[in-house]
Picture (tube, rainbow, N blue to C red):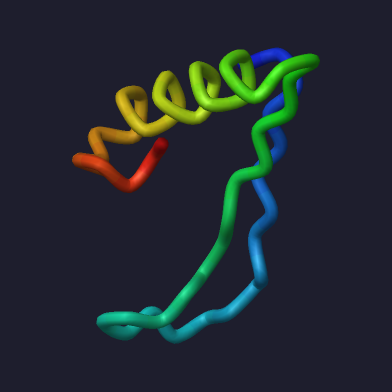
Length: 54
C-alpha cells in the first residue's frame, strides 16, 4: 500500500487499446512529494512513463 495514493477504477468491462480503464491520484504536501509517489506507482506497475512525469 502507498500512502496518499488512490486507484480509481471505472468499472468498464471491455478493455480496448487506448481506452482509459482507471487512473491513479497521488497526493503530497509538495509537488515533488506527489511526483515521487507517482513515479513509485509507475515503477510498481511496470510502466515506462519516460518524461511523462515532470
